[in-house]
Length: 184
Image (tube, rainbow, N blue to C red; front, side, top):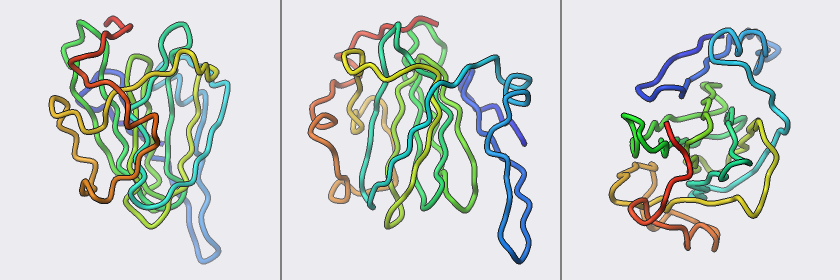
């Protein structure tokens, strides 16, 4: 398993070792000892999975403290553009983002620490997306930032006509209008 640092402190791309033959493949998607040696100690408490069709865009989401979450995400089937935005006030990368294609084919994962907004768009006909979180879901602490914020300038890999949003995501705040609860 390879842990690759990104240009934003704390965000990692994780590439598992994949062992394949004519029968299929095997990979270790998570190893606590390796994770803690390369990133930091963590206690994941919940695994989530979603299936979405092409053009679905989920995000940019985060939970306010004390229910903020770190996430380890991957695309099991299909292909997504996965995005983590630094919303830690005082961070040298505040407002910057990491965008990476995750797919069932490349088997990459992205670790998104606390203090980041997170989202993904589906680039394939459908996608199965999985993520581990280190804190429970708390609806009253659930917030977000608009995916199409011009200040963030994120390329989601979709045209505006392809994007499918939930009603909740259509009403999220723009980056300049939101007060971050996170400090660097």
